[in-house]
Amino acid sequence: MNKSDPHSAAAARMELYKGPAYPAEEETAEVIERKETSPDADSDPDSEKDLPDYTAAQKEVADRAHEIIMTNLERHITIAEFAQTLHASPTQIKVCFHKVYGQPIYSYARSQRMEAASRLLTETDESILEIAGKFGYENGSKFARAFRTVIGVSPSEYRRRVLWERENQTFSSLSDWSQKSYD
Image 1: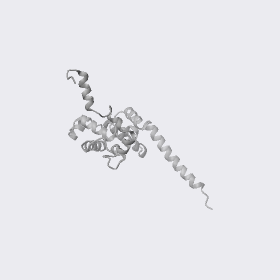
Image 2: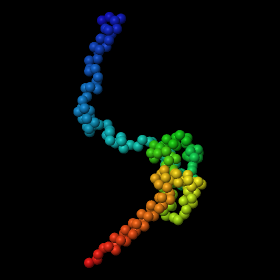
Image 3: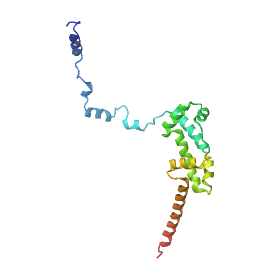
Image 4: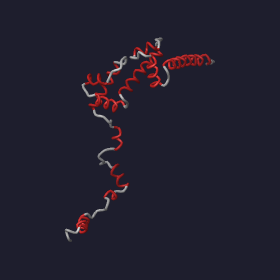
């Protein structure tokens, strides 16, 4: 074998390797399945799906941000305020919150405000503008736009529909009661 001949050097390397050209071809689908389902398997592939995609530290930051949102629904908190309060960078807060709660922090805060506003719309006689003011909206049209985005209908339509359903449900249950025959 001539060391200066590149072909003979390649032949010598091939001589040393006597396995198949692609070692992965050795394992058939059956062999792989047996390995995965054997009691000795390192981990259950399904259990990995159940693991969260965030760390405990990220969950703590997100949960603290959630607490701030829920205790301050009446105002719009800036990311700088979150960062100062939580002693974390704005990017870290955004990333942690999205990983834990599955949506951006501002979208989540807006949806929580609109859910609370929807309860007030049906549980009180306050005007829509008064309710908007309770959640930091000085402009009624901006509140209505945010409400429609989250809930799907305008605040006045929501109030009308829910109150109508309550009335009809009440009448429906009363009519059911009056139609029963007592033999």
